[in-house]
Image (cartoon, rainbow, N blue to C red; front, top):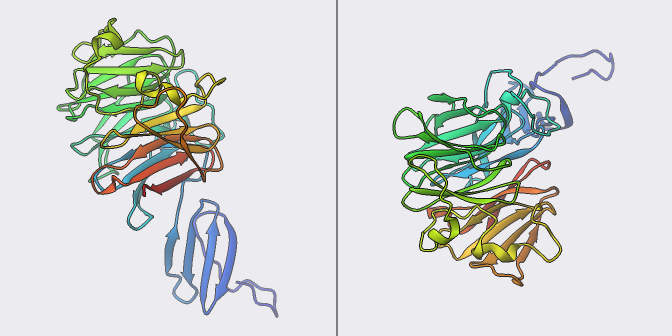
Length: 346
């Protein structure tokens, strides 16, 4: 605060980062910060109230949902818990205090943080475990009841991790790495490594578990749809043929009979970044490079026309249907727009 007569500073208030916009009325100061937060400050007491906050560096990719909250992570060293009912962030923790560089092949980013502090994949177990995967190949296991505390640290991946998924019973964590491997961990005990699936020829982008947890199918950037046994990580070379009667717990893989129609004529499939099935498995949501959230009936065969929804200003990297009380909602995150959007099915 500067005295208009003397031009001297009478009070300085520290908001912890660079203010980008201010307004004042009736002794209340409203400040927009570089972090994306909007804070109200009482000028007399300097008491601060945060009304809005957001991710604020690089891209936001990590997205998963438990029974009542949505979790996101990004290149800004933040994991955030959001309350869809209040439409606000209720808790934030850091990804890591470590300052490691990637072991090899860094993820492309405009973020300023070390690779060890960037997270582009989250997975939540039915038992409440939260896997936070980093851009230097580490996985930090926390719990949704205490997202600040790390219970286990996994470091097998040699490159950054784009996808992670728990089995339906929460007993297995599958981690898909850009080193072309899928790492399977025993989530019931000490997260020891059960097996490694090694047959992919490019970085992993999608993983789905069968309902009984015995099989996973996965997609990589080499356009391979492969199938593996979770007991030992061996490839099921019968693949699609031997799993025609298999019920799948999730629908993230972007290749297969049920989703043939998500690729418009003349496209090669690279523009689709994320898929999900709703709880009743009647709808398919897709996020793409054009900033669209696309909604299809399941199955989606060739020639199907989607309902297209635009609100993101950048590519949509992940989409998730809610479960339980959130079953009527879709949640999406845009990479460079650093935004979580909440859509209602009507």
